[in-house]
Length: 385
Image (cartoon, rainbow, N blue to C red; front, side, top):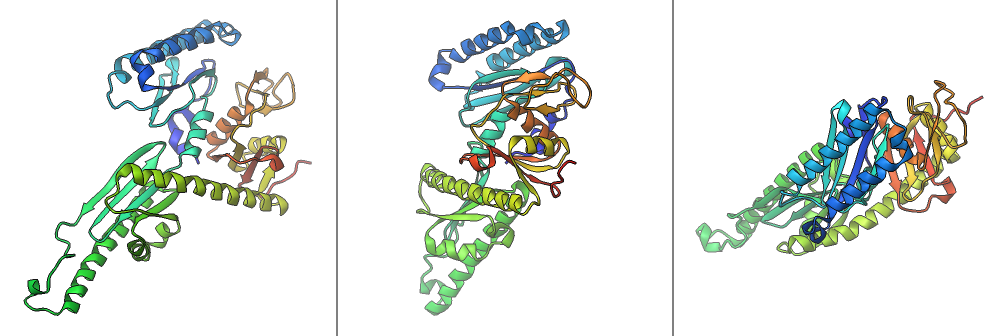
């Protein structure tokens, strides 16, 4: 799920007469060596300036967009191309006249596109965040531990512990004839302290990063012991176990995590759609269908918007107050402005919802029974008179 916190800067931008340039650009490493991305950029720029939308803008707006193009080209040529660790894709939001410049990079491919609009084009960002939710992998054994965060294709290691003095191999003689049972208790005490320390760190990280899911990896016997030590705040997020050798390569661990992540997403979507159906059936805090969802958004009722991933529809929007409509009408009923056409009013809806401080969920499953769009509401739905 994406919330307004992740896009705070661009959501604070107040649309005026100067539109925003939104660019999503993916980099194939082999193509990058041939500078093909620069050719793609030039083609995109040329195509956008030939569109009637650009030609009908004021001279000031056109100059701002041209400066956006120049700034984007300079950044990619001077900064991004020289970065040996550059990621697979970029999202850039720019409005030179308003000093807006937001750049996000991702360790995953995103479809290359450019949109010039009064508001930032957020749909690809939201879809990527829903496909690649943040989760934690906690790898544990009796003497080692790692905690990894996976988010939008990036892997961050927050903890790597190797207890060099862990007494797994203590011999009876090392304790001056101490009984074997006492030695075993000593080892178990040391292991228990090690696992509790990891559990405390996991709790700290969960509070800081709010992981959607947590996966525990290792040998099953140590996983069970460790999970029993977790705070309920973390345990409630444990989605699955990954049985893997403690010394397994990182890529093997990540591959296993990706498989269980897909199942986690399916289960989560099943539960979400079932809950939406229940809320709609009870006439409480759920609504489906585009007209009703638009009405709820206009009233500021939406808490979480749900949209089927590949669903889009034409519509109309007000460039001043962001009013949306699916049926053709000339003027905005709120401020009498001339409405503009849009090939994908879903993007406008996503922007409006995020702007209102709500969340957006892009659902990969079919949502035909909800007419492809639905929402959880902040308060029970009130039908208009």
